[in-house]
Amino acid sequence: KSDKTLWIGGMFPQTGEWAGGEAAFPAAIKALNQINQREDILSGYYLNLSAYDTRCSPGLGTTILYELLYNKTFGSVNSSILMLLGPACSPVSTAVGEAAKMWNLIVLSYGSSSPALSNRDRFRTFFRTHPPATLHNPTRIKFFDLFGWKRIAILIQTEEVWQSTAEHLETLARAHNVHIAVRQLFDNDPSHAISNLKKDDIRIIVGLFYEEKARKVFCKAYQQNYYGESYVWWLIGWYADNWFMKVHDVECTTEEMSRAVEGHFTTEIQMLTDATTKSISGLTAQEFITDLNSTLKHLFPTKPIESVGGYVEAPLAYDATWALALALNRSLERTNLEEWTYGNKDMKEIMMEDMEKTDFFGVSGSVKFDKLGNRMSKVVVEQLRNGLYHRLARFDAEKGSIEWLSGEEPDGSRCWNYRYNHSSNN
Ligand SMILES: CC1(C)CO[C@@H](CC(=O)O)CN1
Image (cartoon, rainbow, N blue to C red; front, side, top):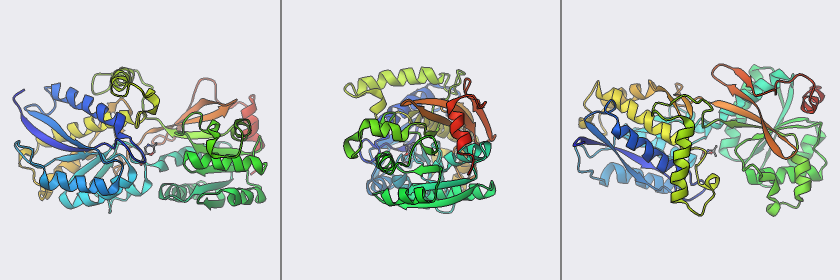
């Protein structure tokens, strides 16, 4: 199409703490190509992406932001980017998201989970298709209510994402008369924290820590004999499936670790819908994944697909690109985006309103933002049984409803109900 070009910026980390851009970038490009084929979206325009690798570094991310704002001339109708797709990593979104509002630039992240980014005063123009880590909490509370668990502990690694998630959990717990009896923080060695949980005879623990610390927690729990049928652990569900078998950094054997972790529950945000209906792109979620898999095998021939950075979050990047294009499409009906400059507050307000109107079915499910710019998603609950994770239920935080998966509805018959009932004396 001999169309005029509209530009957006992009940030996709290829290395660093979390190289989520490895799979997210190809997913975003796929969406962009499909969007530019559509006559009914941004007709008369070609949407182009100026993408950079932030290496998951806040400093580099900020430098790239200024590069995009000041130095880049796009040689098109307009040398300003209309919006920013990304960043992925929370620390980069925190730096870039706070600065961007000074240029009235809307930032749409596909990979940031930090609860701090829900602060609308600091991140006025920030949206994300990746829900905050706090989205796990309503699911946890729902289960505590369901099984009459009144006395809970939280074991927290001292990292901002986990501490702010714990604060949110406590607020919710109070509203549901669930008593957070103990909050134990640890930096590197959880031994002391665990002996305190044992001393207080805590039976239900929410563990907020990264995978590497999770191994330390359960090896210490094993050594202190703080594990087994009388304890209910609630962990993060996005660790590697065999995380507790990688004993290179703990003193326990795989057999000891397996016994310590047996029976624990996890919560994880669902990032690819189970639905078989077509998404806004015309592809079903499975068609999208099949196509992405073949692209990633080509791009990373020596890497197993699951270990490509951001593989799980790729649907969020694909849907973020669609959300961005659809919002701009709505704005085109009300204003001439070719005249966009960073000082144009009126135009920014139009684009903000149009972003807030986002409501479509994507490959990651229904895509909508709440008033804080956060995406609402479903949360999947699993339990580890004989070393394998079993999906128990899916929780819809918006409706507050639990959908039990095939035959997992608790009826007091199965062993894991024993675990529930046994611990209900708290
Ligand atoms: C589920 C996870 C792994 C949480 O961290 C996100 C990255 C971040 O918040 O920095 C990516 N998705």
